[in-house]
Length: 171
Image (cartoon, rainbow, N blue to C red; front, side, top):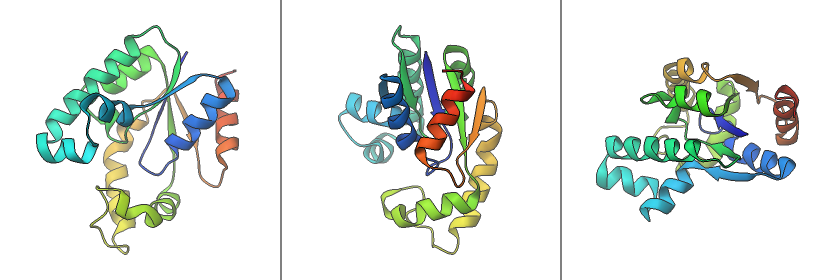
């Protein structure tokens, strides 16, 4: 089984994928890490040197390769991955896509302390962050809602969310 976690940055994809991987004794893959490993450089450098179009093509290629494999794993994808090409269709067809839904307040609380590590929001003022997240989430939500499953992460621990996903998937 391939479980694919998607959602906006700060929703907990990495932490929840680690918990699920441990509980299921299954391999864990972070798509961004896999891209960096393949390219031998950071996502930020790929964007800077080659641009977003190059990055998105690479991301889609690697996503397809992973999902075409016979391996079972927990895959966390970048917040923008579902929004390009046929990525959302492919994720639903070749795995179980789970949208980790978080409200704007939760996302702001989680992202503010690590804002400088997130290129997309590093230059946005603290005061403008809720509005930026709200607009961005609105643009992406259409894609996120196409996932087979959705789980709210608001006011829940990583363990509670992982258990809810496992229960929802009858695992």
